[in-house]
Picture 1: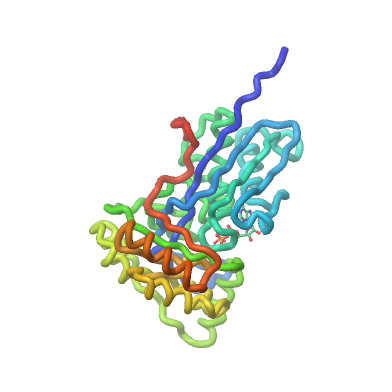
Picture 2: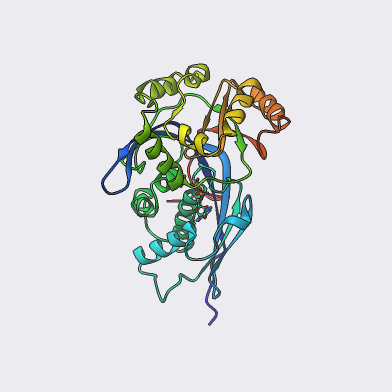
Length: 313
Ligand code: ATP
C-alpha cells in the first residue's frame, strides 16, 4: 500500500522593528534584561516545509550566501525541537525538507533567523497535524531564542525578560516605514559587547520609560510616535558602523518623521507620515548612496501564518 504524503506547507512570517529598546546592565550570567516594544512589519520571509526521505535545508533570496544550511540554522533547530516535543525525533534528523525564501536582511537587526524558526514551528505543526496551541508553540519558541515568540504572534507587543515575555500593545493605526539595508550585517553579540564597553567607559544616555510609546501607539499618531523612537543599542551599532550616522540623517532629510537603528542594526528604520510619504522617502533615500537597498513596509501585521490556509495553530 502506498503511504499518503501530505502536501508541502508554506508559512509567511514578518520581520520586527523595535520602536523602543531599553537595555539593562550586563547580568552575571552574561545576558541583559531588556524592555522593548516590537512591531511586526510587512517585510517577510516565506518558509516551506515538506515531508521527505532526504532531509535538509535550502535558502534563497536576501543574503542567501551568508545563511547556514546545516544544523546551526535556527529553522532547523526549530524542527528538531518540535520533533522532540511531538515524539517524532526518530534518528538524528526530522524527515523534512525546509526551504527558506528570505526577504528579511540577514544579521540586519530585524530577527530574520527568529522569524524562520517561528515559521518552521507553525509549518511543521500543520504538516504533522499536531494538536498544539500557539501558546504551546511559543513555549518551544522561547527556548530557541528571545525574538522567536514575537514572530509567532506578530502585531505590536511589549517584551520583557530577554524579550520573550510578551504582552500585546494596542496600536490604532497602520504605520508606514522605510527600511535601509546595509551592505553587511552586524553581529548581535558584538553590538551588545560594544554597548557594555561604551557603558564601562562613560555613561551614554539611556532611553526612558516605554509608557509614552505605548500611549502614542494607542493614539495612532505617527508624529507623536516619531518623537519617541529610542534604542539603547543604537550608539553601539553606530560606534561599530559609523556610516550609519549618515544613513540616519539622509532618511530624515528625505522627509521621514524620524529614524532609528532597528534592534542591533545595521538596518535603519524610518517612520513616515503615511503610505505616500514612505514611497517618496524610499525613492529619495535609494538615490542618496547611503545604503545597499531600501524597502517600504507597514505594520503592525500578524505573526507567522500559513499561506493559503486558515488552520494554523
Ligand atoms: P538577532 O535576532 O540576533 O537580532 P538579526 O536579526 O540581526 O539577529 P539574523 O538574520 O537572525 O540576524 O541572523 C543572525 C545570524 O544567525 C546570521 O548571521 C546567521 O549566521 C545565523 N542564522 C541562523 N539561522 C538563520 C536563518 N534562518 N536566517 C538568517 N540567519 C540565520
